[in-house]
Amino acid sequence: MAKSVTMRDIAAKLGISVVSVSKAFSGQSGVSSELRQKILKTAETMGYKYGTEAKKKKTLSGNIGIIVAERYMSENSFYFKFMRGISTALQQRKHYAFFHTLTSGNEEKAVLPDIFFHQRVDGIIILGQIADKYINAVLNTKIPVVFLDFYNQLTAESCVVGDSFYAAYELTNYLIDNGHRDIAFVGNIHATSSIQDRYLGYAKSLIEHNIRLSDYYLISDRKTETGEFIPLELPLVMPTAFVCNCDEAASRLMSLLSEKGYRVPDDISVTGFDNSVYSSITVPNITTFEVNTEKMSAIAVDALLSKIKTPSEQLGMIQVKGKIIFKDSVASLNFK
Image (cartoon, rainbow, N blue to C red; front, side, top):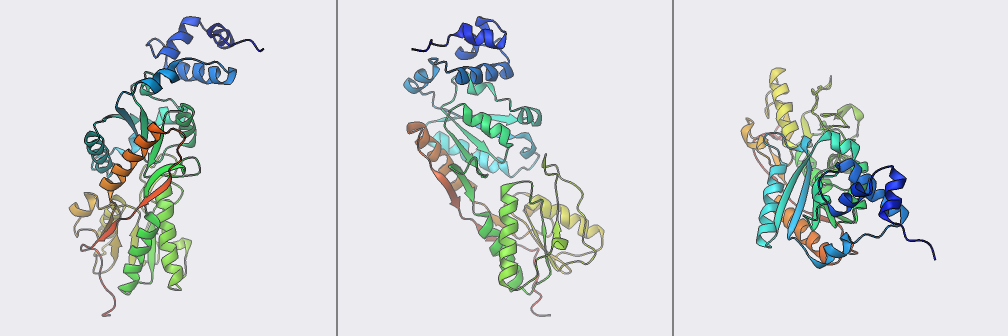
């Protein structure tokens, strides 16, 4: 029979003290997050069995961790709606939210917050898109997790998203029904899965109406790696309408159009997405698509609580529909 792996073996492997290994397993202070992760990963690789998992199964804290990248936490962020929805849904179910803002540095290094190591939370909701390296680090903790408003091949087994594809399809159809055929899309399709889906919905609408799809009318609004907004560049030949991936991008576009002497919607029509505060504070108010954040948040909470009860459960991807909110930024060309 193979010899059982001990804490001393792990300490020798990493060149650290047994005390540090013990602290990492028990969640005590005095060990950095980076070293704690390294110890836990080494223990798993060596086949060491420690008792924290059994303790977790016996006693649940009632706490749920919510992690959101700091790049989504700008002033007037759309994600505050999700945070409020998650908090409300958890309170109704007699659970409590631990919010953690993920810095870009910790995301890049895949440094997980201490809530993972002190048995403070029963499960995790990841809000918004994050790096694959970080996703893998989260999944390796074996803590139940649900991803909200984001999916890829790593997260598709347990995620809740809005139906961005059909939403952008509906918005583009609405513009075409109003006589527009030269329609541009604003958004970096390499930045997030949501923007990709919105572009694909826009593309499907154009294709169905025999309108040529052109890269010329694809305008990037942000950096791929960080999501930081960049200055918008208008095409040399202007469209009659823009489909924007979010209300903030639409608001920025409308400011640029005004600077260049264009009037919205008299000269150019604009649609946004999310029905965030930007759609209401921008003049004219932006026709947009409202994501049902309250329903998405409640479904994500229920899905996570179900996974906590049955960790092996695979929920798949749950899509939630929204609706167009008609405001003042679209004009009809039909009468012309």
